[in-house]
Each structure stands twice: as structure tokens, then as C-alpha cells.
Image 1 (cartoon, rainbow, N blue to C red):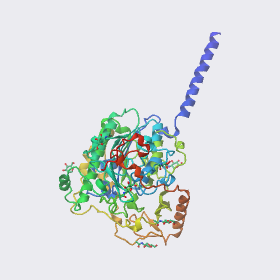
Image 2: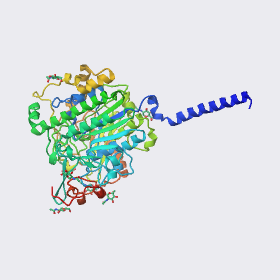
Image 3: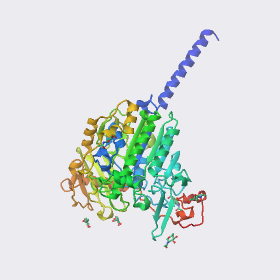
Image 4: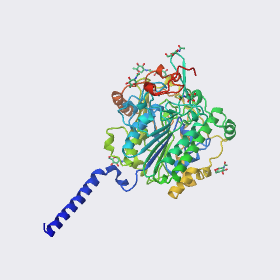
Length: 575
Ligand SMILES: *[C@@H]1O[C@H](CO)[C@@H](O)[C@H](O)[C@H]1NC(C)=O
Ligand SMILES: *[C@@H]1O[C@H](CO)[C@@H](O)[C@H](O)[C@H]1NC(C)=O
Ligand SMILES: *[C@@H]1O[C@H](CO)[C@@H](O)[C@H](O)[C@H]1NC(C)=O
Ligand SMILES: *[C@@H]1O[C@H](CO)[C@@H](O)[C@H](O)[C@H]1NC(C)=O
Ligand SMILES: *[C@@H]1O[C@H](CO)[C@@H](O)[C@H](O)[C@H]1NC(C)=O
Ligand SMILES: *[C@@H]1O[C@H](CO)[C@@H](O)[C@H](O)[C@H]1NC(C)=O
Ligand SMILES: *[C@@H]1O[C@H](CO)[C@@H](O)[C@H](O)[C@H]1NC(C)=O
């Protein structure tokens, strides 16, 4: 072959390689990741509180319970003022992990009972399964509450590389025991602290919040920083612990001294439990900063639902001044304390008042992690990244709070003519939880808000180290003032929503006045939407606890009893 021809051939080959390279680059690079093409996938850390009241964080205006770390996270990040959840635990966690309203999977009813054979359907992908496909390492510390009859239903069967914590709804803070009453009155009790499938007996005696913090820090410590991390820290706090009616603290004398200005003993303990959880947030954020991960992290905090001020598992938390508690569709049950921080946001240090629902986090995280939203198929969640990062108005104009075909309580929120309406129909337990409850935390006996403790918190210092700047006293005061809903407080008891209530949430977030008569068109439209959702729902699959799950058969532990060849079997020992 003559030299010139050889040369021409080489040129053609070279061009072909370059051309192929360009094509491959553009087809293989996910479109949603374009702003992040040159950046690493962010670490995603989600901290979940259990039954925390909207009024029980400093950034919502109460001085009663110091939460300097959560406050620092919120003021340096974004306060999510209209962050909605489901009315209780299992449905909320199902919504968060699937990106779909729980009516899509029959998980929208009463929370899972221990020994109940039910789970997120195995063919419904979860957030950790999705993120693993994008290269994430996935870890859950703390509560699960989405099924544990079979190993495939537990966290490590549903996409988490590791899980350290408990499978059921709650445990006691020191001994990790959980009881269950069978319909015939007989009591099952067992130990529920697991590392994967191993019972962690040596954890007994360690305080849950501290143990979960220690484990979360261990996860971050062991994590290889060049890989993206997805860590969910799902606290027991401030749910009730022992026997479902106590709130255990490490040292009762310290608690009583520190919170002497709170009259009710249970609420003194609650204050300490919340404050210790806040301390945990500080330790985790500091660890992220020490590992040089914070500058590429997103930290989301929310409560799974409102506080259970009264009734079953009452913890004396406060959703003041909102109406209702956990288990209701009133704002107190579903408009929760929430905030998000990330140095990756273009705008930070503001209050976001857009409608955001738990189902939005899956597409939001998936997109920012470089995933193609088409992979998720048709889901209820939407990508809220631009709404948060650039404070642009959201594309979400509706939130289905629930359609419940068993207790017949349904609610939907909709933005119409620039107003935010809520239609609520039916009630839970004949209206037992439908009033305004909880302490305002604003009496003269309560200490002043300590801005300096926020500026000196571990979280604020870690943020300063990672980003070079932090919030200021002026910003703190301005933001805090703007989320305060004191102006709408009410003791109005005269609302009966059995037949339907329409509330204007902008002017009446405390849900005092039924506007159904003056807005018949809006009401008709929202009734219709509820009917449309009702026609699509997958009926609730709740079952009674299976007597075969009795921990007495399994060395007094809650085990994955339908995989029972894998459980430690004992002759029935009485506990
Ligand atoms: C447990 O639930 C699964 C899923 O609904 C079902 O396939 C299975 O048969 C149930 N097992 C028992 C023992 O009820
Ligand atoms: C209640 O039911 C369980 C399971 O069927 C049984 O083992 C237990 O003996 C019953 N207790 C009483 C008090 O009848
Ligand atoms: C709303 O949706 C449109 C169309 O998909 C999109 O272009 C726009 O960025 C979205 N807005 C926000 C704030 O996400
Ligand atoms: C809910 O409605 C259904 C159908 O109308 C009815 O059978 C059921 O008893 C209702 N449940 C309650 C708790 O009222
Ligand atoms: C406020 O917090 C700072 C820093 O944590 C502390 O030194 C100070 O004593 C606190 N002030 C009051 C009045 O409690
Ligand atoms: C609410 O109204 C319904 C009828 O619409 C009635 O049956 C119920 O007793 C009322 N509840 C209360 C708490 O007044
Ligand atoms: C059974 O439970 C006891 C604690 O009650 C624990 O010390 C022991 O290791 C358990 N046995 C097995 C085989 O796991």
C-alpha cells in the first residue's frame, strides 16, 4: 500500500473513532444530569423524625424545645413550609420510598402491626433500589415499618445494602422490646433490634437515639467518599417507647432540671427526646464535614406525620396552632416540620411555600443523581429540584392526601385561582382527634430564643467549614417570623367534616371555617377528583397479626417468621 493511502486510512479511522466517541457520550449521558455533567453525584442523607409536632422545632417559632442544629440546617438551607406527608407512618414511608401515593399499592390504611404479613408489593421498585442502579451505596439506620414477614420484605431485601435498626412501628428506647395485643387479648412481646438479620442483643441498655447516631456515623466513616452515599437515618424519636406510653430519657433528673419550665411531665421528656435527636443531627453533619462530603451533600429532614398529642401512643408533641394530630387529614396530621440543606442549591436561606409531597423526593433525587426520569415510568411524584434550587414556582398544583375506603376519610389539596383549597371528607374515630391541641410554647415562662446557640451549633460550624459562609442573626429572625402561624390560632371546635369541609389554606391554615357553601364549584371539582382517585385505588391489604409470628417461638425476637427456617427457633418460652 502506498504511504499516502496508508495515511488516508489512518485519518479515516481516527475520525471514525472520534465520531463514535461523541455519539456514545451524548447517548450515554443522561439528559437530566446536564447541569451535573462535570460534578459528582451528590450524597443524599435523609433524617426522619417519628411523630414530631410542627411546633416543636425552633424554626417554627417555639422556644420551648431547643433545636439549634435543625434550625441551623433550616436557616442555611430551605424551610419547607408546605411539606405534606400521609396521615400516619406506614403510608408515609411507602409514599417516600416509592414516589407514588400509597393508594397505588394498597398501603394507605392503618399502619402495619407487628406480625402482620404485608409489605410494599415486591414488584414496586423502591428509592434505594433505584439509586443503587445509579451507583449509590444505600444504608438505613433505625425504623423500617414496611413489612418483615419474609426476608425479601425487609430493608436489605428492598434495596438497602445495610440496615441497623428495627422492623416494626416502634420499640422501647433502652431494651428494644415491642409488644402486640392479639384480638383475643393475649400479648405478644419480642426484641426488635437487628443488624441485617442478626439480633443485636448487645445493643440492649444503650439509648436508641445515641445508638442510631453512632451507627450512622460509622456508615459515613466507612464510606468511600468517591462513591455516592444514600443514607436514611430513621429515628425512633420522638415516638413513645416502652409499652407505647412512656417516653424514656437517659437521665430523668437532668431532664426535669433542664425543662423545669414545662409543666406536663410527659412533655418535659418529649422536649429532651427531641433535643437529643437534634444533637444527633449536629453529630452527623459534623461527620460529613470532617469527611469532606458536606460540600457535595443534600440533607433532608422531615417528620413522617404530625405529632400524636393525644390518644393512642400520645407523646404530647404539638402541632399548634394547626388542627388535628397524626391519623387525621387536618393540617396538624400532614403539614409537618421539614427542611432541606445543600450547598448545591443556587438559592438558600429562604422559606419555600410551594406544595411539596413526600412522593416528590424520589424523582427529585433521581434526577439530581443523573438518572433519566423516564426510567421511573408514570408516578405521582414530580422533580422539585428547580423549585427548591432556584425558588421557581412548582409544577405541583394538587396533593392527594388520601382516599380511605375503610374509615372513609379522604382529603385533597388543590391550587385554584391562586388560592390553596383543601377538601376534607369523613373523619377518623368519629372525630376524636379533630380539635386543636398542643402547647404554643410561647408563654412568659419559656426562655428566649437563643440565636447564638444556633450560630455556635455543630451544624452551623460544619456548614461554615464546608461552604465558607453561614446564616446571620437577621436572616434567622426574618425567616422564623415568616413561618410563624400564630396569627391563625383558634379554639374553634365547631367543624364537622363528616359530609365534607372546604378550607382556604392561605387565609385559614388552622381550618376553622368551612367554605363549602360559598364555593360550590371548587367543592364540586375537588369531590370529582377524589372520586377519580377512588376509582384507581388498590384496596387496602391490611391483615390481622399472624399468631405464628409470636416471638415466643423465636427466642423472644420478632423474626421474619414466614422464612422461619432462618429464625432461631426455641420451644415456646413465656416472655
Ligand atoms: C403473605 O403475604 C403474601 C403477599 O400477599 C402472600 O403471597 C402469602 O401467601 C402470605 N402468606 C401467608 C402465610 O399468609
Ligand atoms: C389467643 O390466640 C393465640 C393465637 O391464636 C393463642 O395462642 C392464645 O392462647 C390465645 N389466648 C387466649 C387468652 O385465648
Ligand atoms: C415545570 O414543567 C416544565 C415542563 O416539563 C419544565 O420545563 C419546568 O422546568 C418545570 N418547572 C419547574 C419549576 O420545575
Ligand atoms: C365506609 O363506607 C363503607 C361503604 O359505604 C361502609 O361500608 C363502611 O361501614 C364505612 N366505614 C366507616 C368506618 O364508617
Ligand atoms: C445561648 O447559647 C450560647 C451558646 O450555646 C450559650 O453560651 C448561652 O449561655 C446561651 N444563652 C442563654 C441565655 O441560655
Ligand atoms: C357530624 O355530623 C354527622 C352527620 O353529618 C353526625 O352523624 C355526627 O354525629 C356529627 N359529629 C359530631 C362530633 O358532632
Ligand atoms: C437468645 O436470646 C438470648 C437473650 O435473651 C441471647 O443472649 C441468646 O444469644 C439468643 N440465642 C441465640 C441462639 O440467638
